[in-house]
Length: 294
View 1 (cartoon, helix red, strand yellow):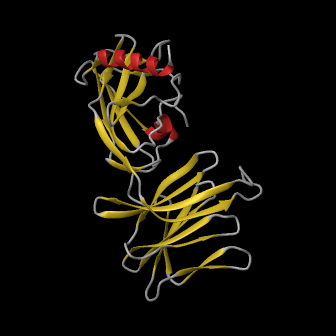
View 2: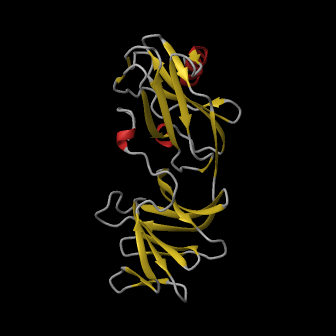
View 3: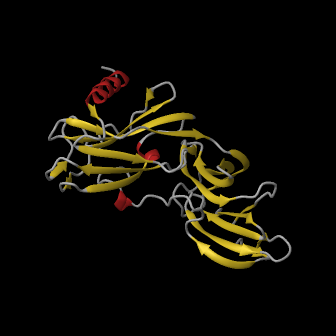
């Protein structure tokens, strides 16, 4: 049987077995933001409550994984997980206990297509040979507006040395805020290392972008009245920190030093933040069910 046909057959069986969340095991799914751009982390929090009246253990069987999602995109086309055969450690639960897990859905499923996705969390309990499902949650995946793009070589001593990576700055409207995003990718391999928000950006004020001697990207952008943020991103998409500056008079700017380092001219350093926006922080590995892809 072809893989696609096999997947559809498995999904059909799953849908027939799904039990509403009011049953013996209650399942809820929460995704804070409805609108995302391509390759951005989509953090899903799943809460599972044991209402069976006894202690149980959620565990995989030869046919089924105990933790998973059912995801369909526009037109009811189901999305297969990146790994159909992933395995998870058993999860003991006391009677009445509620446990929560947060995962990045982009780690588990290829969600790079534009459209609206319907997402359910599914929990399989082998003791009853049933799936228990959350109510569906919908998210929309679009893309931001590209305002700057630059190719840069990976320096010696770094992984992928000699290859070319691409930095892209995008803006994206979320509610009343216009957010600035950085994307780092390897177009030759089709790899996307990050698509991360850098915080609010004020329309009409173009950010200052420069690369240092190691091709780390520095982005200086206006976030409020006389307030700027300086973000640093490595050639491999690692977030290296963010510093805020207040500016009493003229606009600050980046100046390259003879040794290739960058210096900010103008402005008074305010604070350093590792989480540049009030968006949810990346999920901790300890929040993921054991066995899920890191």
